[in-house]
Length: 285
Image 1 (tube, helix red, strand yellow):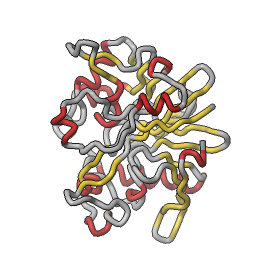
Image 2 (tube, rainbow, N blue to C red):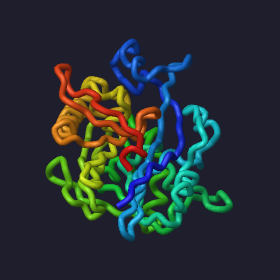
Image 3 (cartoon, rainbow, N blue to C red):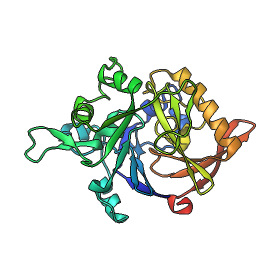
């Protein structure tokens, strides 16, 4: 098995929204804001090469939205999925599976693109199966008013129309063991219904793709929960359970949204679970 970080593009989000009720005087120590209160955010995806399977976890925002839409998110840097894939000798057509942790636009927007004459949409990975779960699919296609702006039909419906959409089963417990994709999956419901956190066995290490369960290093303290989360008290509980496992078993936490920290481990301290060591992807992969 080989793992490759795929940087799909960087953007900015409001620091207050990213940290909810936590005062700026606290969160700006780890996530400094610009003059507009915006903080740096990455969309760091992960490519798994395992025998005949080439699986991409999340796809970022994509590039099909309007200039006005992207203006809200202050895109920065030159990263893209195509550039990142090419760096490792791959192309979109090589991807066999696209796993979406959840269907918010900054995690799945790159799964769908304009067709050639921009009269409609098509899947951006022609040879791939697209993986979600039935509970989350229903949640995303019949969105509540709180999340409606994050679940965009043009990002979601074309996957179903392509005939390439697949559903993973939802476990009775938190973790789906030994899924058909070759890794365990932790299911979390605080941010959105049935978000999926892959737990990948790689050369004796457990690599956990943290998605929005732990967006950045700054979110390690349990009460530091995003304002975007639909059930913040549930997030707090899920973070505590998962980070306890991570500290107990020395999991390597791959941070999708932290623009400046790629992979971390955590440890138990008197103040709770805190940062242990920071790694680059090159250090681990």
